[in-house]
Length: 341
Ligand code: TYM
Image (tube, rainbow, N blue to C red; front, side, top):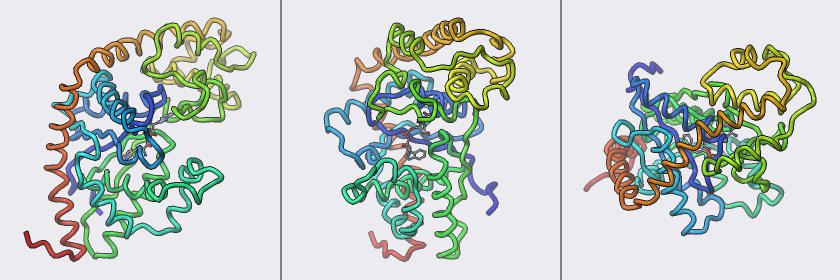
């Protein structure tokens, strides 16, 4: 289908389950800001609270995490005027289109999702039905806006392929050219930020060890301590990216540095090649603190005015619904639902 027939529109989401990590910031949020600032797209960013409850969430913590995530978006540079910023449950079209996509997606497709297998763990029979259907709701998030581009970290790639499959199957089943086949945007040095304790594992808010991740709310001392204790190898840093191939932990720290400094890995290595970690780690800490503390400070300031945060979310939801409602209406019409009021 010719993508040109769709308005260039970016959609992406983050779960308000626990705090934001450096992985979320570098892999997603920082790139959301870049796409907003390029001015080539309409940009829509969502706190996906309906996705969060696919695993147990304490209600008060969920409410707080949703507001804190909103503060995080704004502190990182999302302008709620230029972008649409809202929480998913305030726009019922997500759940409504999600149902239609539950009926388009096949069991076999869902069973192949590695994230479901990881999250459900050994006891998959006890996982919620929502966790299984998660990617169909994610497809609805994106396609309810006819979004053409979706910036995400590497771990969401399979879900975005499923979104494409759902759009294609819907279009084929009903003989229409209605949903766009969305482009994943997985770019930059930090599409997969790894744990500071184990270079083979993704940095994640659900890792039991707090030392494995940098949280966006960590203070300067905590950031410095976590980087000082980050696992590395005894070699000096190489001068070219090729020298990082079998060195997962070293590669991770260099990728983080490059993403924070807005440089390529080669540029960073041209400067730091030959240095020991004892010299590189303090450079990385200083850079991380310089880039992250203004964001955490601003988040704390914004969190003092919850009424304002709720106002922003409410206004964002209204604007989002203006786009999603007619797309859902048209979808119901294509599917054959009687609409008489
Ligand atoms: P979530 O909440 O797990 O993560 C939000 C975003 O952060 C990225 N990310 C990372 N990037 C690099 N390194 C890491 N260690 C790292 N950890 C997380 C994720 O790739 C993601 O881009 N299913 C999604 C939320 C979602 C969504 C959507 C995204 C729901 N609907 C529609 C895009 C479009 C999720 O769980 O992200």
